[in-house]
Length: 277
Length: 277
Image (cartoon, rainbow over all chains, first blue to last red):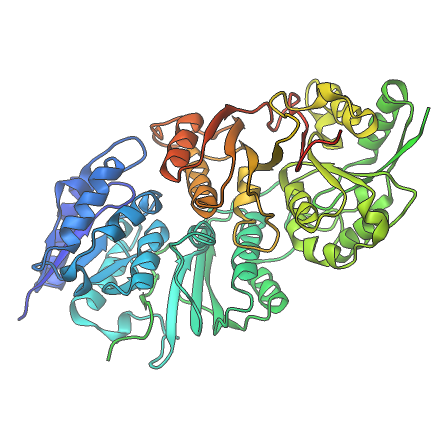
């Protein structure tokens, strides 16, 4: 059985050591061919972040440039990847290209920047922190199914050969719009999901994203789950899918229906670009 | 005494009639030369908004194109102006140019679009809804001081002749980045303010804005008040000014210090572009 060496890195916020132990125990039975490597940086704490910008960037760079590592799995989202993305991209060397990168939420900043630069393969999918969820075992097993075995059952069910994809948390993506982090999405199906935002904020972020992508030949948008919507002092008047259909119609972007992604244990894997053969 | 006809319009969320009556009573003593006109649209309610997109846009357009109106004063922010800005801009006629437009918060979408199109004069300043605040009388009087009398005492104290300015709520501006609504800010001093956002979200939005404006020859950024910051589960590690100084340094934008603007009664007026003679 070929070993797959997966390094966990926390470009945003930290895990704790108990979570690392849980993940190692889980993988040892379900995916014994996976070697999970947890550098200390995953557990560093500085204010909001898993260590300061320099520590997070240097941890990512040294793992990406290590030829013995097959994949970098983002530990957790939260916020912080955008602050170090450009420093990381400036230091990527040849071994960084032969690597998988997986995560979601705030990690989308790095997935987008790596995809734009053509460095490695990127996938929007579950992270170690998903173990905190009820039933989170299934989510991290699904991520390992893809990282270690390329099991098609881990993929978002609408992902098809011959079509390019990208997937982002909507707010994360809105904050990439107009910056060098956002890749060219021409001919891509874009899947988006959201969590913990008021519907007016969802609408606003989708204005930003669809207005920006108008005329850029997006193949279409699929809407993942929009969860934990806070209750506002008055109803918004539309649900998340109605909002998405309206903006797509307004900017002449095909709305393709729902996507099986979200901030939850059912979050399926969406590889960026074409899926590998 | 020359009469100044000020029409109130609600491109985002509604006022109530009692607030309109309060404002008319207040202005009748402090600014008797102001005629305040409250079309019914200001009080319309449809879901989140002061009427649906068509109603809000048509109310704005008919007031802007009315040569008997001297100024359009945005009633309130909240969210909604971005949804109608392009429809409004397509219908602006000659009388819309001889007009003042004032508001802030979500109204920044229209201030930005009008400024970009060179239609009328725009100012970031208090709105009728500020009457809801303790001491809000002072805020709306300040707005009227500028709209009706061009009193310099109403201006943000750093505003100087011969320098171009723009001012935005940061989140509003971040959602304009990468869309056709954001004007060219070359050689402008940009003033920003924020309310009710976590510091990580402030940091994220400022990444978006400063990364986008990098290399665009901004004259500098001034930071207004950042208020009602929700408490997060852990401290961010920097305050709003430290965050702003860091991003400005990172993207080589001069940080010029604080600005006397914010979601509060002290919010001073910032005209867009050069101040009038």
